[in-house]
Length: 351
Ligand SMILES: [Zn+2]
Image (cartoon, rainbow, N blue to C red; front, side, top):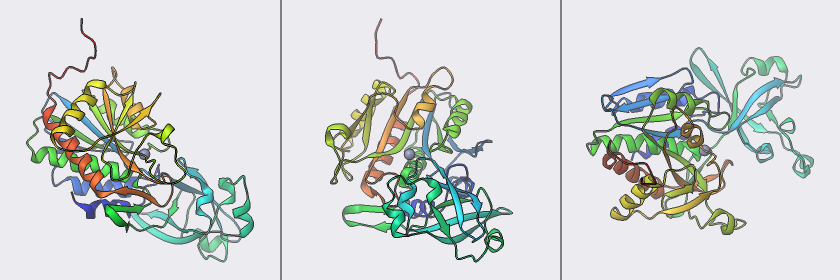
């Protein structure tokens, strides 16, 4: 796997609704292995391998990240924001921030900080209206020379390597998953898969599911593998009774849920056993809270399997995942793309 490309993805802001800068980089990267590249009006990127095959596997990881969008600049030059996705605004008080302003296809980064006062931190009901971004401007006019309503706002982070192959950054949800599907597609091609593989880095997962819907309706896949991050329970304050026993560095996580096709899970288990890839399990009583829910209900219905990367501190700026887990997810999914065949029986019942 090309670690440097994941780092580049993490350094490229893609707040939900403004994913183009990242998607453009993914297009450039995917040219090295895709037989065909497709885009659509939702800013999806779909890299196709074996486009002539009539058995289509969709691989989906979302390219968007949580953050904020600029709503207003006040007389003092402070930036006001609205949530984009499930983000907790209190986490950004006293935190390095960045605003991305697009002009003529170029993306300018403006440095800022989340306004901090001691009283703000004491506030129990903290809303998006309490978060202001200070870019150092002295007036509204000065700020508006650099920033516009609608610009993306998110934490200004760098990738930090931790012990035991763990690493930290914002937006590992789900750039680690988007990277995994890209690398799995690339590897499946190297392994000689003759199936149609449609690698979709989807948009809008954190806000609307718009990307996965458009992509899946366009591809009309026979089945789909979704890769997202999931809650680990290996740090203080977590509850294994509700989350399950999930460790960062413990291997890919398979989802057990009525939304997921059991036969696809079985195939994943067989491959993992043979390849010595440890598996972990999470339960979703209802929907999976991923693009998988959207994809499953497209067309005549799509059998899905959900492979998750275990993650600590989801939806914060210090999310933590593990390089080995990502590598194992890539191998598992690449092998899946080779082994599944057109005559695969998705049914769980016999007549
Ligand atoms: Zn996600």
